[in-house]
Length: 115
Image (cartoon, rainbow, N blue to C red; front, side, top):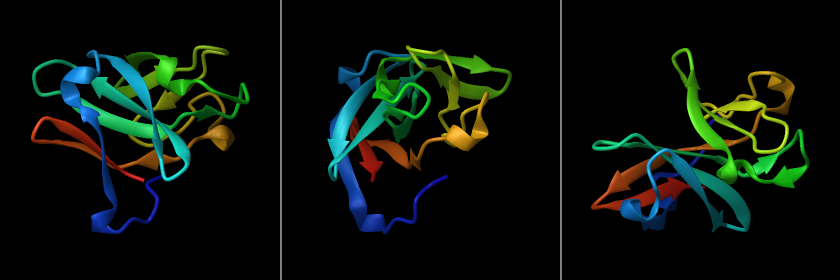
């Protein structure tokens, strides 16, 4: 779920071109590790979820494999392979272990996250 955020809390993360399509990077925002993903080429989507995998007890989600399960855009944790929905943060195999999701956007070639 998106956290309650004020519109002025957007933080620049990096230029969009610094993220290889269909991969993620980790950013430290307000003291929290956030996994930021670029999905697709051309008009890419950007997504941001917490980087901490509650199943593996490790900050690794930004290193996961991006893909889709049906209509859902997901990242598979690099440790135990649970899938996290990039739009909602939901862990598909164990919903009780879902992660925070943050609004993300691209403006003027820069990736911004509200966290």
